[in-house]
Length: 332
Image 1 (tube, rainbow, N blue to C red):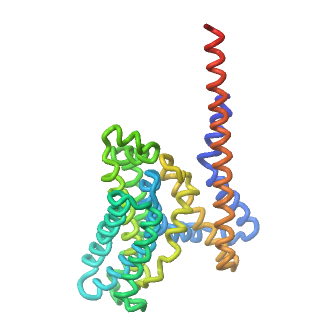
Image 2 (image 1 turned 30 degrees about the vertical axis):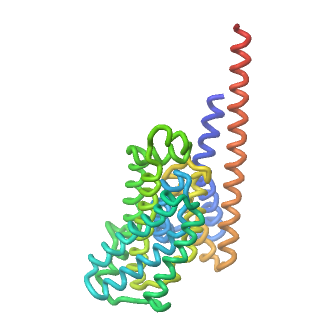
Image 3 (image 1 turned 120 degrees about the horizontal axis):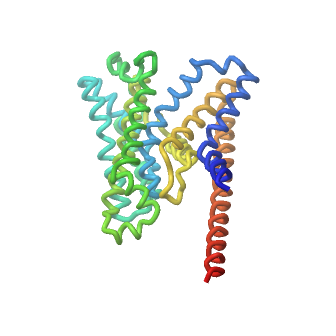
């Protein structure tokens, strides 16, 4: 019985690793040139920007809320950074562009926590507002910069490792530490698990939800600044599909839509899996709908696995409780 539990736990927690391993083995046989260090590093590097956004949104989704506006926050912060670097210096542009996510995230939190508007509806609205602001200030045109110093912020390497991966690791470790060792992280799980009980315990749910929205906004704005630095350009359309990809990666990584469950390691696996699928479709010369098809196929497969696993776990728990009850009755 104990062995079966361990096997089930390994299969559940590492299911995405098995999927990625199977994909890599297939590609190594079908297209050996795919399986090389440079390409694998390139996959992680390209997944890092979405990964930063996903990791930043993870505490919020664990607390049973959504932020559909992260793509628009990326867009707006990128536009702000490009506009500022053309007038001031790269440091000012990076700082203000990144910190803009605090204000944008706070506004999302205000709508959800204080005005009690559903997080999906409210952030869907702010998604349009933030992107609209970006369209207005750019006059619906891409904007660029010639600053080489600003571009280095996203293109240099640290001991041969692209700086994008370094940023991803730093953000990942920071959010992992928050979730694992701080009261803020523990309250994320508590609120997602049972919000009513948290209120009865005196936890200020509104304040924590607002903080989680700010963290999500900050992650998205930093990713937007990094993307604009990498491209030395910004546009109001650069982050249109980011929110869907990020939420898909988070769900793939095991963060339940019902809240209260999830890990950073799982989210990272989900984001890298999506990046791997995108890389494969491009490598094989498949674009557009093929990318959407493979993403959707994997997402549906993992969600079905989770639903079946959760039902089986609930049935096993119910049977164990029934056996305990029968044993207790028999001894009396």
